[in-house]
Every structure is written in structure tokens, then in C-alpha cells.
Length: 195
Ligand SMILES: *[C@@H]1O[C@H](CO)[C@@H](O)[C@H](O)[C@H]1NC(C)=O
Image (cartoon, rainbow, N blue to C red; front, side, top):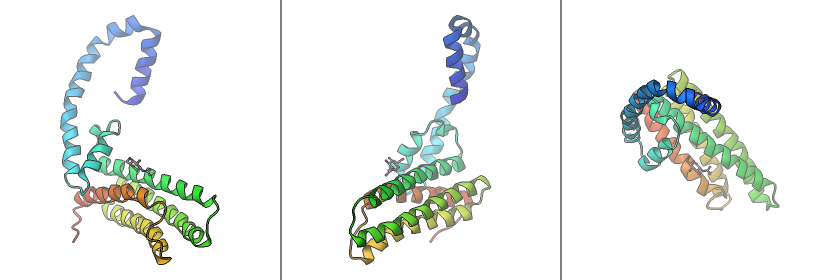
């Protein structure tokens, strides 16, 4: 059952419990069939994650998404990118928050650049999610890579000032790993060979 039909089911159940339970006994049989079909789709998550560099992250993040076991590989790439997008959005918010604090001029300048970098990264991830819709795997690859370059630019900005890492560096790791994982899935879908 998808979330919407489950919602209505619960709603109806609340209103007319006995009638519904009696009439849905037949439907339960179909639901059970669906449930037993799930392991096959979860295998797809395991199989797809087998292509990636950060397999534990891949599996943990994809299994945590409702209905991900019903997705095909392209859907799984999309889910991974949406998680990366959520990461980038979070990092962007952290940067905005930091910019409201009193900062030394160097940090402030770097963080302003980072803020723009992450706006760029978010934009590129959104583009790559859209590219998956039309099976534009080369485009998706280009834009995910561009998003990673934006995040790297933020770090480089601090590095050029002799600061080894940005205040969001620790949060960047998962974003990067999700991007790497998405790239592996995308490249496999598009038959893109990387050196
Ligand atoms: C990044 O995404 C992962 C997986 O969804 C999540 O566990 C982590 O908390 C996120 N990090 C940030 C900074 O949002």
C-alpha cells in the first residue's frame, strides 16, 4: 500500500472498523503477495549498492527510505541524490547561520564564497535529479561532479588562506560519499566508463 492509500485505509478503519475488516480480508491476500515480493526488490538495493564505493552508507541510507524497495536502479540513484541534496541544503543553512555570527574578516570572506558554492552545488544536484527523469546519465554525471567541485571550492577557499578546513568540512564527508555512490549507479545505468 502506498502512504496515501494506507492513510485512507486507517481513516476508514477508524470510521467503520467492523465493516472494513470484514470486507478487506480478501484484499489481505494480495497485500501478502506484495510483501513476499519485497525481498527481490531489496536485493536490487544490495546489488545496486554493490556497485558503489561506500556500500554501508548506500544500503543504510536507501533502506531507510520508505518504498525504496519498490524502486528500480534509476529510482535508487534518484533517492541517493535527494539525500545528497538534503545534505547540501543542511550545510548551506549551517553556513548562513555562521555568517550571522561575529567573524574575523578572512573567515567571513571564505564563508561568503562557500555560501555561493553551496547554492551552486544545490542547483547542480537538482539538475542531476531532473536529468535522471529523461535518462540523461551523462548530464547527471556532469552535474553531480560539478556539485562536488563546488563543495571542494569551499574547502579550497579556506585552504588558500592557510586554514586547513572549513567549519563545515565534517558535514561534507557524507555529502561527498552520497555523490560518489550516486555517480557509480548513474555510470552503471548509462554505461559510462570512468578511468
Ligand atoms: C547527510 O545525509 C546522511 C544520510 O541521509 C545523514 O545521516 C546525515 O545526517 C546528513 N548530514 C547532514 C549534515 O545533513
